[in-house]
Image 1 (cartoon, one colour):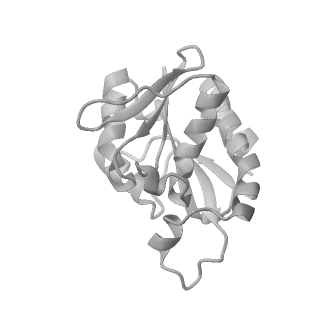
Image 2: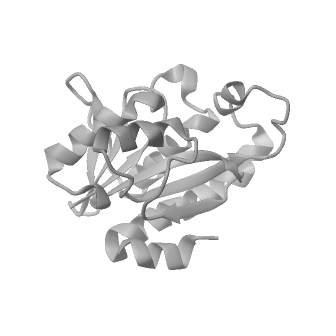
Length: 187
């Protein structure tokens, strides 16, 4: 069993924002598997769905990005997996729009959702797939305002094929592991 957790912020207000790119990848995985997310329950409310014939569970925590560590830890405990068996999909403002980068472990790199997970798990040893949302156009703009802003039409057109690529990368990780995913999808 493996977990794939997309990070983002809950609610309609944040639905199509740059910071919810992790959720967009989970949505693509769910659609491709002809599945639906089951509503979460409990204080952490994690929406989750079995995926790939039970080989993996995909999830979207319904807590805010910066508080996602407790939700990820709860999932890891619920499904009795190691942190190394939990792929976190997250946006990265430091990568160009749509570029994907996989790392099997490492620092948060300033991404507050990853910081929360590292703190909750007590380790940096979990895989993450970063999806670029940067464009260089936010120079002089408030970073929070930028990541919580919605994609322009042009940005969405550029991002869509990369979301498909990220979806495929997640499937590669489930089937063949971190090394194969890194070899094939780090662009």
